[in-house]
Image 1: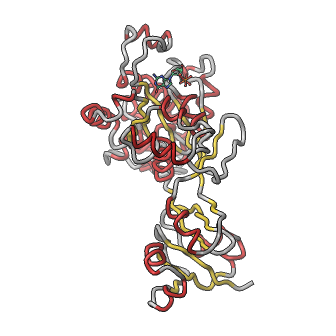
Image 2: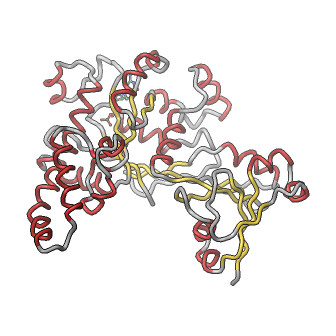
Image 3: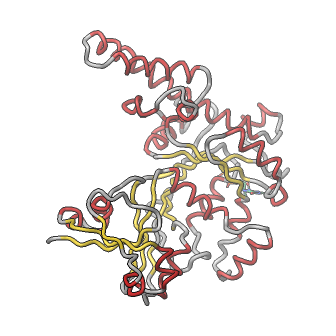
Length: 369
Ligand code: GDP
């Protein structure tokens, strides 16, 4: 499964956020969640549609799609030099499919920043500086990867085992990193195609998500949000009060209580739900739905997958023996109220093997065994 690694300097609220994420039961009591190991949390992708579909098809069982987060501790200045937990840290990031960077914006005189950052900033809260510290370590690690690879690439180039274009792309990447830019950002800016560099497994080529851990009064500070969003654009920026999110997880709170607490804070969804959603999109994933008496379920596929590929997620036999997909649009089913009525209205679509799955498709597959 694809995972999102949570990274950040010490004392920014990573653990608070991660613990809140993985104990996110209060919002959806019947959503399964699992902890594979202490550092991995599997959380439900929030999807209101499942709740609306369940009574229509007379089931109580709802199975949401999931998003996996890994808590990656240990980034400090010098991590790329293999100091302290540095090597382990980089190895863990290498395994993640996206990077979620948590940055402290909240001020609390009782909670100091770590000693190194304190020394660098005189204790001031400085999100831009913190992001720079982390990204510099990732960039240095990538530069090491490239420097190690270059002698062999030069030899391969002379021996015509690799194309000149590939070699040039690696050199362009080196230049970008030397200028202090991540490959992700350079790719988005059209300066380089990160897919050309796939073989190098560069850390900064992974998609980034930024979580700014804010105070209550910063939660709706538009000017602050704009400033910080611009700092990390085009990566998505989320503004979350990790402390508040962890309070929402109190098992004594009902779904209604949580809703009220969110509304009192002027929020339409929890920060954690937003993070799960943005994380899912950042990984290039989407869902399709199945709805029957047994269960209502969201299945995870990659954007652009065809009907047989989607069928294969349910069962490999469905893909091998694929004949047709019966597709009902979620909006049509909700509007018309039953499969029967959807059929009568001529809105049940039969799709073949080239059909590309769309968000909101409710599918049933016909297959040969
Ligand atoms: P980590 O080292 O990044 O994992 O940070 P922790 O999650 O352990 O948080 C460090 C300290 O900051 C703890 O005492 C938390 O209670 C506190 N903290 C975390 N998030 C917030 C927040 O949003 N607001 C405030 N005021 N304190 C927070």
